Image 1 (cartoon, helix red, strand yellow):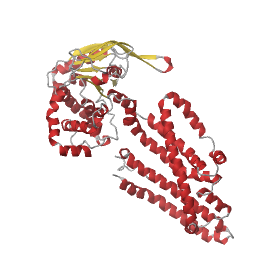
Image 2 (cartoon, chains in turn blue, red):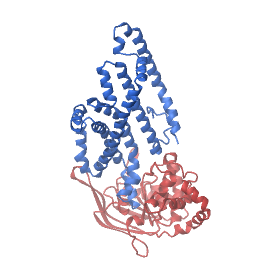
Image 3 (cartoon, chains in turn blue, yellow):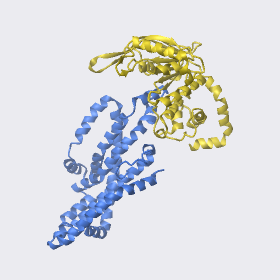
Image 4 (cartoon, chains in turn purple, green):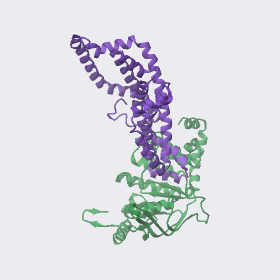
Length: 272
Length: 296
């Protein structure tokens, strides 16, 4: 119902940062042309925005192939994180004992630097797609578990008692009360995960890959083709933002009730 | 919603029949009588200690009567309702729910309807679907439940709001939907846990008149937990006063005010007498402590 409102709200929210960005880009362009061009090799180290756009156009084919690879890794990794993360949230929710047994270990697992883990994953699983999917999954999994656990815990105990007076069993209470109530939390977690997932895939590729924006960017870096490195950065950012917006849109469709009565308020929710 | 509309288009007579039979259906509710004997209940609290919520509590509620449990905060009123609802188990003592002819309900949730302190409406269901959720859980198909509940929206002052979501309803409306959700289960015993505590005074007054009518029509036994003396007198056939923790019955007062009651009953001189007597009892048992400006 309010898919169009999303568009309108987004336009209103997007205009100020767009103006800021335009000012920054103009300044950058001027600096590049007026100052860096005077230094030998200067504009090669920090190419002007127009040079980055030119690179986007000339490298369109290579960028498309590598972007596709990264998108595939990202989406599969995210899906994996969703399934496993939701599963973990369910198991942790089963009993306080499970929570005590698993939750602290999950937090500790997040302190393992992926920078160290990614090369190991390549060592174990080769240069194929699997280690990248695993990196994305590891990056995205934690916010989803935490959000899911918080969501399930948010159920009002009085609501559960009320449903028990209806004769509802554990499964009915889960399906009718706890799961729908947890969805807004879960979507918050997914939105956080989604902002990290493309970076995760690029990271995985950086360590070793045949295709993908990460390895493409690395090869261009080694060739001092800084403009194309920036072009890759632009594509990665655009991908992340697109995924974020897609998630917000899905959220509106899946839990429209969560936004009801809020659309009119002038909340400062960025982009959504 | 679509299902309901198409069912309504196809079967207007069926809906009409539901409407005309409604009184009969509701009058078929068999009220339940309640006997509570020597019930005690304690809760563990931090530090390995426990708090005695109820102690040696006795209570008798006649089938079809409206009884209020009046007591200060923390007197175990809600604990008592939890036990009557079969949600909690007493440590000792006996609770029996039975129909006047002596038969026992198959389970506590087949006998009771519970109206919680907060409306607890589900934000993802509209008013109608919130009102039908109890029936759905009890096994009624959603379309059937909707057809049964929708006509009641008019009588409950909710006409035109069936498709509204909880955040679009006023506090009084939400409480009526909450009541409807339990009332349509047509249980012989309705347990009301301070349902009007969160409402403003004017809304509460109109809800009192409305509840009097609804209780009359249903014919179920009503047990209302409250700390509002006037609410207790206005609505009840009998008021039980609980002591502060550990809660036990210190007095049972029959309220002999003429029916039908309404807000005009508040002006009855006997009303003032009951109020004075109940307040005196509360004061004598420590349920009402007046210290300077703080009176509760």
